[in-house]
Length: 345
Image (cartoon, rainbow, N blue to C red; front, side):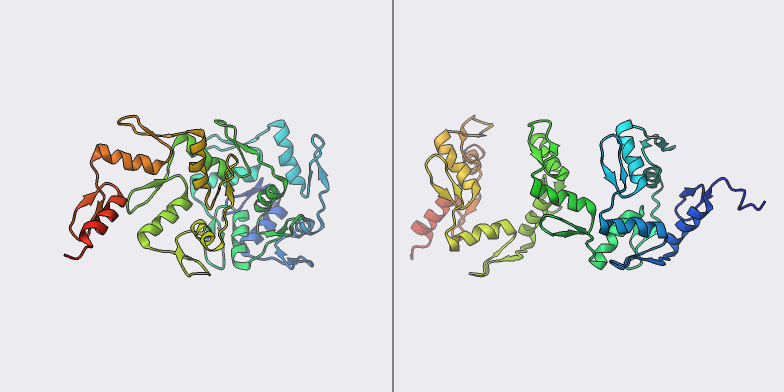
């Protein structure tokens, strides 16, 4: 008996994955070689093994021949059904010998171990970027190919990965499966819940490396940085004015259109931006949520609190560029210029 025939397992020397059958091992090696002799006659996609082509075709046919006997959910692959069943049983038979974490399937354990080893055996032949698992490489390649094989059966929009389609469908269904355990508010997306929770925790993990200001969202930091760079990539097609972010451009355009989409349900007054409606509503409610931590005086808008605090600090940030005199409030500086410095001697 040859050494090859007597093996109890076959180990891939590239990604370290193990196989009990030599035929499965040989099929796996084709992934690394880049061989893909089996082609889909519907979309032309190629595969290294025939069984992968069979499974792939179910994307087009919608066939899901494997059904869970507990909840009735159907799957296109038998292995997916086995993994799914473990949701009901709670079984996690695969254990990491480094950190002890357990998994319901072997492939998840293999991928997990690469966190410890840093191994990234899957390489994009177009840009050279490397990945720790093949599915991430497949998704990445769609950046280059533009392939979007997942289609919404309601509006027809297409997506490059199944997860994006699942998230998109919540626009149509209104499903909000992520709930805040502090205030109970619900969200369609996990990242929206993460961002929301920072309202409660005060966490601001994104820091400006120029001025040190912190933000709860990466997008807010990106917009803020344009203050320093002067970048204003959004342009008004009516007057040509430029804005640093899309929402500012939307608000600006209402100057031209006269649109005031935010209405007070008490007096009926309308506003161009929601923040102005919020401030206005406090006239009716008497709410003053901004408090001076020095004297305790309260204000309905944060800008009024900022101005008030200058009484205590003595700060005078508005300087006359003619005579150099400083003022605590902008309108006092403007009044000074009109009455004093801009009058001919």
